[in-house]
Length: 75
Image 1 (tube, one colour):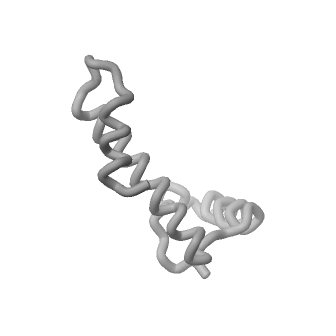
Image 2 (cartoon, rainbow, N blue to C red; image 1 turned 120 degrees about the vertical axis):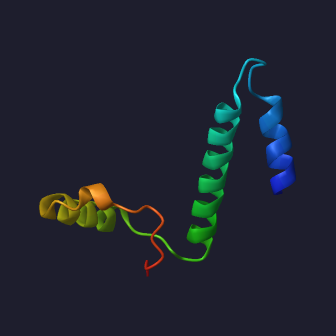
């Protein structure tokens, strides 16, 4: 599905009383999902065990508040 069609489909779904903030949030989610799919297709993914190990290390070091989900240094 292309971007234009995804946006058009999104505009058909919400109730008539939705806000611009609601639509922006849903666009953000669509973008995040698409980015994730692109990263997976490019081989930029972590196993469940790798994620657990990374999060545990960050939490134990007190750096969990700085967790960035947009990392570009993944193998």
